[in-house]
Image (cartoon, rainbow, N blue to C red; front, top):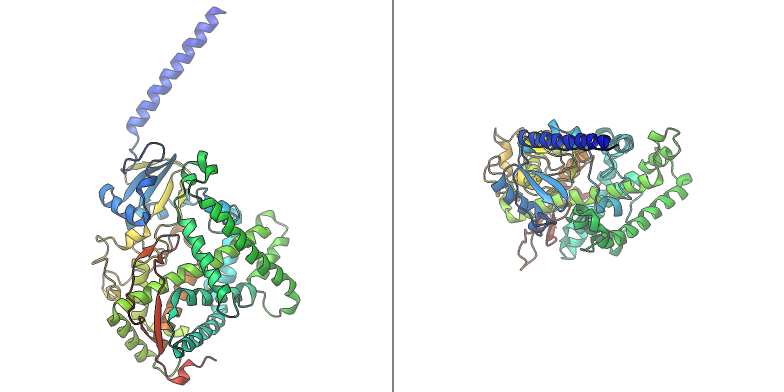
Length: 507
């Protein structure tokens, strides 16, 4: 017996020594972690990010390089801050970074990650993506609801003309949110969500901004899960309260839609398609009512807020640089004139307007930091080791302001896209110098729709009106951080019609 114990002890000792030596050898021979700032004990680099994390991380990248490692609480995080670094993660290692890490926003806002934005990469996510592309977000679907965009822009322009006659300023983000929510509502529900602009639509806008802001916070509980239950910042309490408001709104939409189904004729709308999938016999091809609610939440929030923020920034930049607005007007007068309204088919003939949109995507990306992804397996990028379960953040804002990529990056210069260096760069996810919608398999599903809406709505607003700031008001260009990059002070402007009276007639 004593002999057997000695043998077991000796074998155990040899095993432990061997494992220690092997780990030491592997540790010495494996690539190092990327460089990054030293963090605090237990909480890591969390206190270093400040109120504007995209700006702070951009400054850190100048010191530590394009691939930067941060210990965030108990979690690993890596930040890509240049086009080449983003390409390495989102193209070369796309599959390895195809999932989202668990977080409070997915749990408390997105119905436990049952949506398209936060869901794990798999059969259910692919079904949500497929249905969205086929019936709402893809090229053919966009063509099918062109009349919806046309009609809603007619409402918007008429409302702006009425505001102008009263001598009142237009609150740009409220106007855009109202119009876009109604566009999306007509595609999904076959009706306008808000019949009249007022307190209900303004409350919806406030709810969307609150969602985008709270979901963009760096929540301590996400990075130190053992203390998540304490909700030290109060973020989760706010999310749960906001979620209840959205759930009431979305549930009401679905119930009213189902109750009125016998009254609708013609082609099924998007919600009809989604509800039909509830009865599919294949489990992988069946959605739950929770999936549908979560997807509607995605479409009504991200679909209104990201595009409206881009348009608002573009108008603000033109008010700051009147010569750009003047040149856009000259192009439109030459191509379209002032005797008719701008049509969607005119956009391809307006290269300067398109350059304004691309320059806005570059300088004011709607999502300054991409929604985080997480590595499934350990990998090597730029000679650095990235462990499994490492969160990836791509600093899209920093890429758009990289002086090694963009000449005079702080200037707003649409003309740069006519130069040989930048002429072929497009914001569709293939050119990593300009990725406002992300890239790879988790690129924003609404990329095509977002570009289309930004160009069409901005072109209509520029073509139809003269723009100026109210008397005595200074233009504020400060940012407010969130999932969508808002203006800290919402833009208000005085508009005056510039077309002939018959030019405002919408058929």
